Length: 387
Image (tube, rainbow, N blue to C red; front, side, top):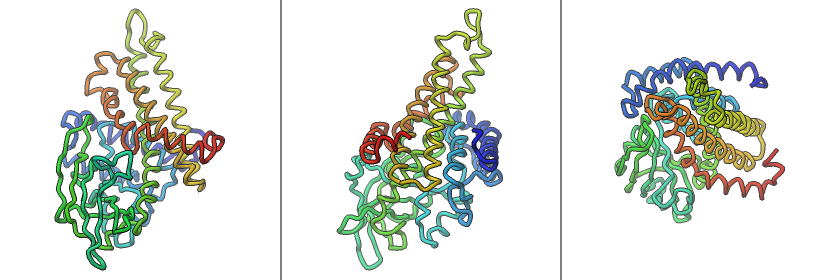
C-alpha cells in the first residue's frame, strides 16, 4: 500500500520474509504430523520470531513487545495469515488483557510469555454461554479478606493444553461482578475434561476445562474487580480485527497460489486462467481481498487516532464479518480451480479451506457480528459506520 510509512513498509516486508522463510516451509510437515511440530522446530520458530522482531508487537517495549501501532499490528497479522496449520502460534505472544495487569502479574506472566518461555490461555465460553455471555455460570466466591474459590467449566480454551496461566472470566462475589482472574494452570482443582480433535490441524488443543474450588487471591484479579466485561470487549475488538487481517492474508496466499496454477495449467487447448467460467470467481475474490484489506486498515487507523471505542468496536465486527465470509468463498473457489489437487492436504488451498471455516465462528459468529453492526448503525449512525 503506497500510503504506508517507510517504517510500516519495512515491518510488513520483514514479517513477510519471516512467514516465507520460517513458517511456510513447515506447513506440510505440521499437517502430516497432525498439528504439533517437533520441539526443535518449535524452538527454531520462537528464536526466529525474536530475531525478526515479530513477537508480541502490540505490547509495550518495556514488557518485551514492540509498542506497535494498531496499523503495524494489522500488517503483521496479515502476513501471519498467509501461513497454514497455525505454525504462527509458536510465535511468542500474549492476550491484550495483560495490558491491565499489575507490575507483579506482568513480571510473572507477560514478560516470560513474550520471550516464549510460557503461554497463556483465555477461558470465557461455556456449554450454554457462547454467543450469550449472560448465561455464564462460572463463579468466584469470596471466602476471606483475600481469598476466592473459583468454580465452573469452560469450553474451547485455546492453548489450554499447554498454558502456564489461564485467564478466566467469572462472576465474582455476591454482586456477581464480571471479573478476569489470572489462574496458574498448576493450581489444585483444575482438570481437562475433554480435548477433542477439530477440523484443523493446529499445534495446540482447545480443551474443555473444569475448575473446582480453585483457591485464588486478590493478587490474581486481572484488571480490577468488576472490569471483566470492559476488558473482554477490548479483547474482542482486537481479535476480530486480527481475524480480518489474517483472513486478508489467507486470501492473498490463496489467490497467489491459484493464479500461478491457472496460468500454467492447460485444459481444452488453453490455460485455465483463460477460461472465464472457472477463473472469473478468482477475480471476484481478488476484489474481496482488496476491499477487506482497506476496511481493516481503516479500522486500525481509527484506533490509532483515538476514535470512539464503540465505533471502532462496530467497525471491527464489520471487518471480521466481511473478511471471514469472503475468505471462505475464496478458499472454496480456489479448491475448485485446482480440481482433484485441491482436495489434497499437502496443497495449501485445501488446508485454508478447512482452517478458515472457524473464522466465521470463533470470537463471535457471523450472526453475532451482524447484530453488532446493526446496533452500531442505529446507535452510532449510518454515516459514521459507512464513512
